[in-house]
Length: 344
Ligand SMILES: *[C@@H]1O[C@H](CO)[C@@H](O)[C@H](O)[C@H]1NC(C)=O
Image (cartoon, rainbow, N blue to C red; front, side, top):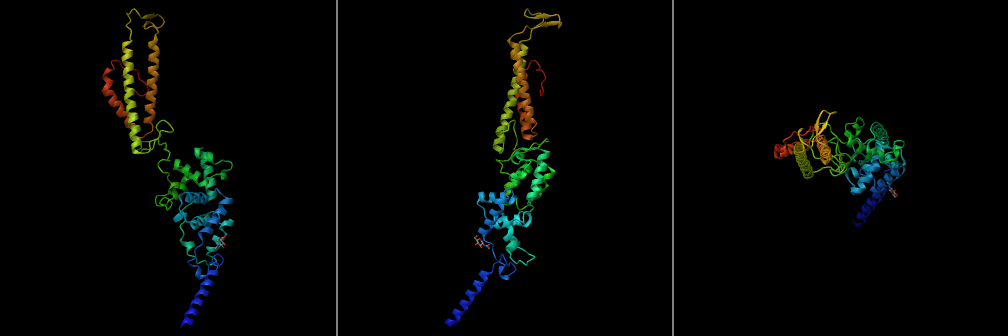
């Protein structure tokens, strides 16, 4: 009985030994290879080899991102990343040799891992990205273009450049591939790599939209003045609101001063001009004050106009609300109608 068990154990050991010796990379058609898993260390080494010779490939960007996220599963599984490159981007490269052999269906590969790994749907190829970036940057030299020299676009991080260009200008025809890759139901959007489709709110840049829209993300006059959250937006809203009130006060002040400084034609101070045919006040410091007040008024009215021209509904109505409230408070002191400026 003991001998029988020993024989069974020995046969088992022998069989598993043979099984262990079958090289699934070389003979992927062997039935015992169905559940074979290509070691992660080898996938990582293959990716490193690919990215050493072509660091601008999209999978290299993906790989870097996964490393920085410390993520190794789903789309970040090293075998998946390797597959992204070797199935449709650069299958001819040396780093893909093992992958191609292991997953060669014409050689009858039965390895399940080759069918089951998660691939990024519709990831554009390296060459597609090169030509799309070139085309976008020829048409519209946006800031992200500077990271890719147009003469040698292959010197840069293609995927990051392309996605940031398309996040700024999603309607460009060259961004079709981006919109497909980043469709709402795509696996990239629902993965840990979704920042390639949509940046976190603290990194997003406002879009210029020449039609009325809502939302918080907006440039308010300056490059760095960007409300991103409801709280920040409320801050900017009240800033504009009080600015509009101050604008109303300034207009009232000027009208009061001009009324006070008015000179009657029969006054002793009046200077008669035969050329202009009438009586006028002589030149004094008041003219300087009036000139500067006029300049201030024009500046303020243009600033308010520029805020309204963000086409943000909230900011637009902060201008209007400030004007209404300011006018209710100080409008009645305007005994004299101020001269019409841009946005009186
Ligand atoms: C994985 O890499 C190790 C170390 O380079 C190597 O010895 C081994 O043969 C590789 N395995 C496969 C399946 O290629």
